[in-house]
Image (cartoon, rainbow, N blue to C red; front, side, top):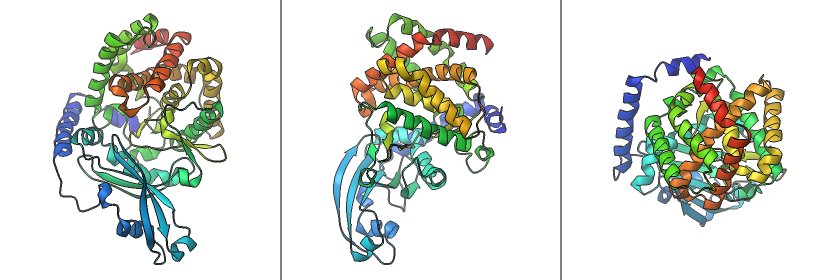
Length: 398
């Protein structure tokens, strides 16, 4: 067990939970405040020519014009701008487009950002971690965060650099799934049991010590119950229904156990819709709002069962797992295959929670058919890999 894990687990008793609950109450209040005294830009309306020139211009280059190319919102406000530079800007190769994420105007959307400190995590990621893994994450030109879910992040536009962002509804090729598995292994190997998790990366917290964890864990429990009451036989067959009851009873203990495993930096929300492919076929990830520390197989299981359907799972689940493990080994991480496979199967339950939550809460703007695809593949893995038996065996030891 790493010192990072021990130090944090010492704080997971009642007083630590009380502190997190108090902080959650403050974060909710800040999110719902109509305005805060913030000096820096943090809304889409703050992104104008003067601001863009201030963060991008070199050698006195000036924007001839900038125009909105795309705009959509969800948990955050998002907008793409095309940029037309003068001769100096063109000569310097300044970006022809940028993608901006910023504070949502709706207090309800700011609430989740604020409680989970999502705006802080993503800004910190781009300012500290991204430069070390630049081949698997977009470049940021500006990243700042404030209280109450307020923030502004300016990123390179992936599509203008010939990369392909994926939506969760997309049918991913097995080649792309393998490429993401390799990129996840690169991320995890880079920070595997790193002493930096106790120093400059201490803000990358273990799951049960994350900001808002009691709130998020309570949400998990409520959606499991709601899903059990409403899900069809296709999405929750009888074999998985009984498994869901066992998981609801044992999840708290399992989550604490998972925090004792070798840890690394996790993307945290590594579903297919947060991945992209480069023109050479390699892959990366975006939307780093849920970064936390834990075992790398958590990210891998979360991704894999969001990206493949049941037919592909039957054919490729084990081989893509082996690719991920082999890549870790090639990068210097010693890991036993049998132990890793058992952990992967247990982390399938973690992915299940996320999929159920998105499904119960109206998909969080995810495509319903894609969520159903993931639930069916997860059910297949639960049955074929005897995850109920694996959970029961672990619970006897805890």
